[in-house]
Amino acid sequence: MSDLDKYIKKRKEKDLEFAKNFDTGYEEFKIGEILKQARIEAGLTQEDIATILKTKKSAISRIENHAKDIKLSTLENFANSIGRKLKISIV
Image (cartoon, rainbow, N blue to C red; front, side, top):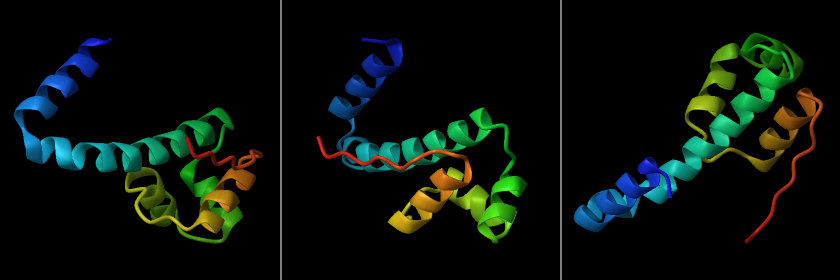
């Protein structure tokens, strides 16, 4: 277990409000970060993605930084724009 994981575990045990909101917030952050990393690996900028998706750079920034309530079709379009496929699993 990493130091970060240990910290999160202890913080959740001590702070119920933190524990209650952490997992949801982390999942939203993780989705945006996955999209951002995939875009960077594809060698594209937010402006490039915006042009491909016929939207504004600010919309791409919101997706990457505040990945809350993103439509499935938006995720699929984003993935396609960087030459990837969207894969969803329920575990």
